[in-house]
Length: 478
Image 1 (cartoon, rainbow, N blue to C red):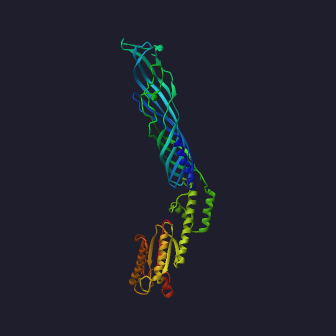
Image 2 (cartoon, rainbow, N blue to C red):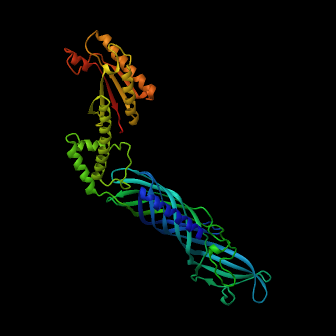
Image 3 (cartoon, one colour):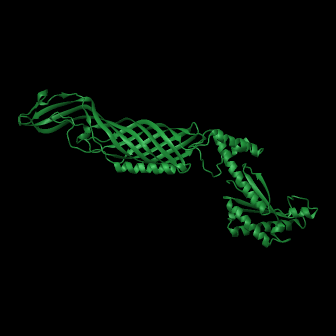
């Protein structure tokens, strides 16, 4: 027993140390349900009884979904047995005569109750449902040590008689000889072994503040081992000793089984950024990025995690907190976006940004065709190859990116020729990027010839701007 306690406490301490780098919580809960000392009687029936459970513990999550818990709890189990049976036992009376001791049980009832202290170790999973509500479950095992186990008779009667076969007579109503009607209330103690119990919980967490979350759910526990120390005594002996149902030959196995409901609270430990502090972030972002950082934009972001984990409490904390978290993700996304735009500008690209139909900001980089290709050709120049090598480094740095390549020309020459030339230039750029490691499926190509000019074709300066390759980085989750 001491060894088991030391092992579990060791796991608790290790979890406490590592939990300082992740989300960690102190929890309290209590409840009740059918907490049954489950057993089968040879000559009677058994029913489970209502029991209670109280628990306190520590849980920590490795990420926003998965974690472990441990702690300590108390749970009581009970049962009530009913016997309607006549038992016959050979015996010898005080005069040395052989006789048959008969005990007739009429609706004889006995209650058993046992209190255990539990030390659980379980895996946890939680999944947000709304901004305040999350589903939470756990599965694992616990060691349960019996603290107090007792029984008490609560009804019925036992009628005892003595049958002497040598005279074919049955004596009754002779209390001085042990033949009487018994309605006395007996009580006593029992001895159980340590229980090893599989456990599973399923419930919901509702955030009422940044630190406090209410819990409501159900539990199920099933004993793995037999906790009874079997005996072969009679329930009631001829000498008037009452041993109890679980100390008799009526059963040889008892397992604790329970199911019910629990209500509790989770307290988040460690430093939590206050709602006031985080609202300040939201206000500063609105000021910094007006007019495009609007409430509509925040609402769009609220439903898109952009691949980042929730680092607040088990669940959000309300609509304000949800919007603040979205704003913080937007700030990080903008910082990454600005860094990539600056890289492209340093490489010689002309850069602009735009919002796609999903409200996500995208980058469009444009490079003059003269840098990449020789005049009237789709053969890549050396300086163009060097530029694409640098471009691949930017592409590789952005996960889940689709590249859209669009080639353009000026209006000198036939339209059909210019469209084919622009298409071939887009294909050349795509082939180079694929050789460097970009997936073919991540590249879209198009040639538009002299369509969509960005400057007038009347002068060479304008025609030079129209001879270009546009590269759009389509990144839904950056």
